[in-house]
Length: 152
Length: 152
DNA sequence: ACATGAAATGTTATGTTGTACCTTTAAGCG
DNA sequence: CGCTTAAAGGTACAACATAACATTTCATGT
Image: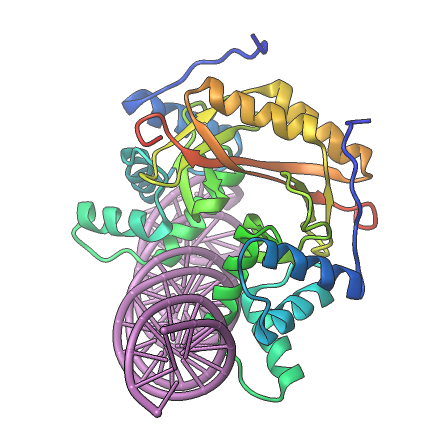
């Protein structure tokens, strides 16, 4: 084992954990933020800001503009409630917002299925390698493109 | 050491190495591809497809559309002549197109300076971790956002 | 050299992702 | 109540990426 241990939330418990984390960071848990978080969490795979805007719009019965969603997603990412998948230009809810660490995404090029693995040994090694090169790592982006077990 | 060894090209030698690699892959080294490669290689840091289109346009004295550049960049990426930096939506020439391996980019959030390190131990470990999860890795994306030594 | 078909490039249009800027709304507080 | 400040809305636009189809270029066989 890699020695990492934490609890994964889902459904109402996840929303609640997100709220706690955001409030602990000194930010407000507004109605809009809750709606964006729930829309985000309703997707199985990473969703673009526009996907989320559309989903929130549908649920609200009114048009919600992308820029509002971007603002909130940026806040979520900096507060560890969500992650951005760089190679997909998309976002995914963090199943354990109360636990801060780097993670690794596996993205299927065929079906888009995205899973994540946590391996602190790898991510620590990446940070150390960056430091050896005189670089101060802040946010490692580790994603693997390829084929999921269903598509390979 | 991590046991990796190769030769880095630059200038005319790099262009020549790129040509050899592309032709060995059964693709043509056309005038347009050479111009795109040289424009790409002329940037110190990753350049967007539009940056490159603009640079080629300037050198040619005629308008070159982004479309054509994208086509060629895609070919370069699949042929190992260039890399895409996912977290920047940009491309960078590969200094050793004749040597196939994953690489790690360090991108400064302040000045944009991008360096790359080769550590096959890390990249191999990432591939293995993906395989353990039942995933078939094809293209690991390993980038570290943070601060370069000048900006930290 | 010439015809031919395949590959490469050009042209135009459009789709998708991300920001900038300013206005409006709502919450907290003297 | 009127002030300040954070959040959200509205509009426009910038930046990144692809699609569809026309035209040119190029290797090849004769």
